[in-house]
Amino acid sequence: MKLDILAFGSHPDDVELGCGATLAKEIKFGKSAGIIDLTRGELGTRGSAELRDKEAAKAAKILGVEVRENLRFADGFFINDKEHQLEVIKMIRKYKPDIVLCNSIDDRHIDHAKGSKLVSDACFLSGLMKIETAHDGKKQEAWRPKYVYHYIQWKNLEPDFVVDVSGFIDTKMEAIKAYSSQFFDPKSKEPETPITSKNFFDSLDYRARDLGRLIGVEHAEGFTAERLLGVNELDNLV
Image 1: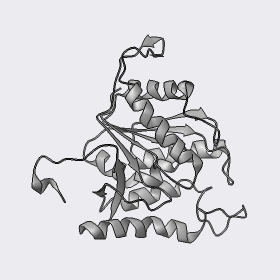
Image 2 (image 1 turned 180 degrees about the vertical axis):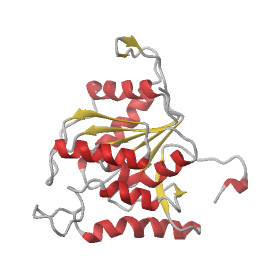
Image 3 (image 1 turned 90 degrees about the vertical axis):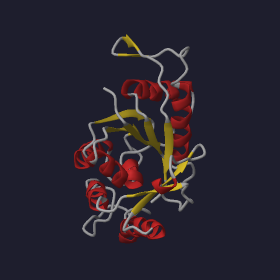
Image 4 (image 1 turned 90 degrees about the horizontal axis):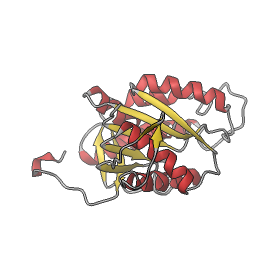
């Protein structure tokens, strides 16, 4: 199956938090998209890996992605080496995306930057014909995505560009709410974490509003790019 967009996250919920509205918008306007989670988030303070599996499946349905897979790397301990790169390469060659979205290049959680570099490196290596991989017993063809973009997470990094997601923020928030074990719940008796506060949950909306304000729209999501960005015509800009 070929997908237009393949979004990677170090943990289930990373994609929803970082680029959920962008995915929902692209899907609404005809793009095909999938999500690959690197880990099951098993070291998370709240919930369990099994519960997050269910939450991720629910969130995927809300966003409308065609596929969601989990590579089951070790939460907190996966590294950017040949073994892990090859597993990511297999996913890239399996779905042949034109666009890859992945974790922030720098963030509070150590897995985010690690996942960012791992996926970025795998995107390049996936295009090398002499690296051989197989899926379901069949040799895979080399494939390199045209674009690799990094969504912004906890740290308020300066984006290289933003996507107008006006009208899609509610879908993003609904997908995030699917992770009921992870975010604000006044009835929960589990330990508090940096992402369980109401302030954090509210910040997802007001950050998108602030980025939207800067380009004159209601909501926007920010990304960093690995190369110089260009436009075909001056009026392509929002």
